[in-house]
Image (tube, rainbow, N blue to C red; front, side, top):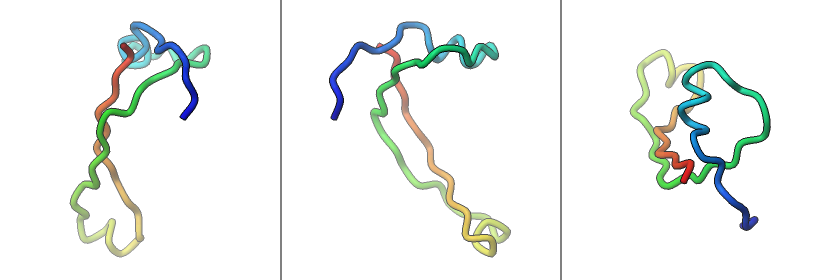
Length: 54
């Protein structure tokens, strides 16, 4: 794991359409989501992420 500082207000900026820079976020939790029939057929996977920007 690489040590570094989290980037404050990053999640708010991303939600407002600002995708500039190289933000540092922390993944706190990751859970697989249930598949629909279409997703099962295409072998795609979805995950629910819990992120933190500090």
